[in-house]
Amino acid sequence: MRPPSLPGVGSVLLQERLLQLVQMFKGRAERQKERLLDLDESEEDSPPATPTVAAYRFPSSIDQFTVAAWNWNVWLIPVRWAFPYQTAANVHLWLMADYTCDFIYITDILVFQPRLQFIRGGDIVCDKKDMRENYMKTERFKMDVLSLFPLEILYYFTGVNSLLRFPRMLKYMAFFEFNDRMEAVMKKAYIYRVIRTSTYLLYSLHINACLFYVGSVYEGLGSTKWVYDGKGNAYIRCYYFAVKTLITIGGLPDPTTVFEICFQLINYFVGVFAFSIMIGQMRDVVGAATAGESSYRATMDSTMKYMNSYNIPAPVQNRIRTWYDYTWESQGMLDEQELLVQLPVKMRLDIAVDVNYAIISKVALFQGCDRQMMFDLLTRLKSVVYLPGDFVCVKGEIGRQMYIIQQGAVQVVGGPDLQTVFVTIRAGAVFGEISLLAGGGGNRRTADVRALGFANLFILDKKDLAEILVHYPESQKLLRKKAKTMLSKDKKPDEKVKEVVPPRAETPKMFSAALKMSQQQGLQGTFSALRKTFKTSEGTAEVSQMPPPSPVHRRSPIPRVTVQDGEDAVSETPSITIRMTPRLQGEETLSVEVP
Image (cartoon, rainbow, N blue to C red; front, side):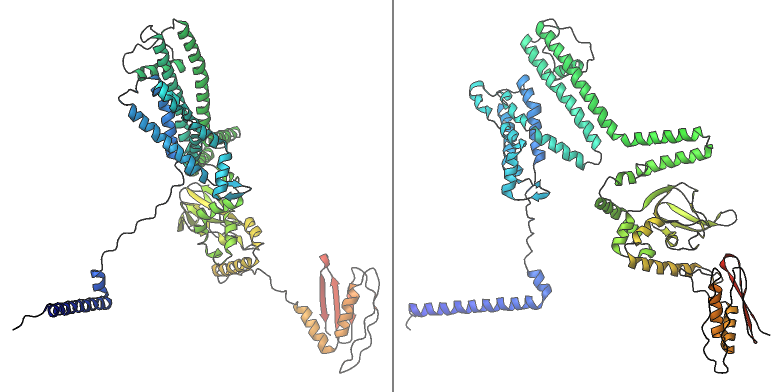
């Protein structure tokens, strides 16, 4: 048997490989079909989804790092220059920190400051070229460039001297702008102002301590009793001397040399000047923080003085004092309208919507009204505090306000001694809304409402609502319709509901009878002439027109009759006599006599 040739063997291997590939493709196709048909299996077999990486947002500012770098230079440059804390062993660490601060300065100047938007003619400018040009025209750009002046090149001649880095302190504008923004966002900005003012005082003591150590080295450490003797922690000892000098505590050794005397005189002068400035600033900060409380105390004292001068009873004085205390503790002010009146109308509306819209939108009377009308109502709400036991409404009084309970609860009471509680109304409820639209006596209170505890209510005055509804006639119609429905629902069956528009008065029965009888007797023209004759004044007589012909008989014209003021007007016929007698205040009495 002849062995197979190489080409035959190769073709067999190729066919086997093709069969394997075909089977693999078929299996893959079947698996894909099963995944499409079975969603659950598809989800299980699918590879886990890779977590999406949140897009990086480029920061809008690095002011916090810039201010930290500025404080590093301001506080540590004098220390490194005066005290021997910078040595050859750690100078590389100091330089690393210095150059890190320089890198922050450069990044702020080249990247962030040219991207600051600004306002030009009321428009916010966002163009990159305009923002860059605007920054380059400002005073801050000049100071920022000067702060990076490279005096470090003199290190080659003087060695690493931190005093050559003093231009870095010129970037002070970033510090003050950062302070302004901090005060704007803090809830209690006066705390930050106190801390900042105290820091100014500590920094002045810090500089004095550094200068005292330099003066001691110049005079010689321990050479006299006045200079630093070189024992203990140099910075702490010198700082203690600065505190006693600038605050003028006393107890210091007397200077002996001319240098020491001049240094001490300058210290005393600067200390008194700087300390007085710090005390004045601290007084202003504390005064601004307690301005509201001071005004409250002054108002309280004036009120008590007034009540004492007029001998107001002690129970009334105690209630007034309680009202002042609770109002101040709950609101932080006596009248919040004094604060809101300083804001523009749009901002007042925004605050009112956030605070009160959720409450007033629940009032059934206002549901379906114009949304803008409700916004106008919000700006007219006034906050009032009622003490426990105070009557918010008294039965029978004229209702001119609607009440919305913001905090606390009120009770509807009745009975002979007003001790019977019908219902308790709590926060979020509304009462007295019908009184805003009812008229003609229908706006009287129907129950007594008493505060259960301390109740903070919003009041909407009827006059304010009327001024608003003038501009919203559709809402006015809707409110009047709702008010009429509520009034009729609340009235008892035997009560007479007074209509908003009174019906037309009925014709008097005597007058109707006279008309009817005149029609039956054919006297329409006679009665008409009688009315015209009675209306004549100053003795002038009028002649009535001929009556229309009667279907039964004809009647002669009525003779001219002259009627004087105060006399009766009489018209007689064989079948009927009509008499009109004047009364007081222009009234008339009509009588008909039939024989």
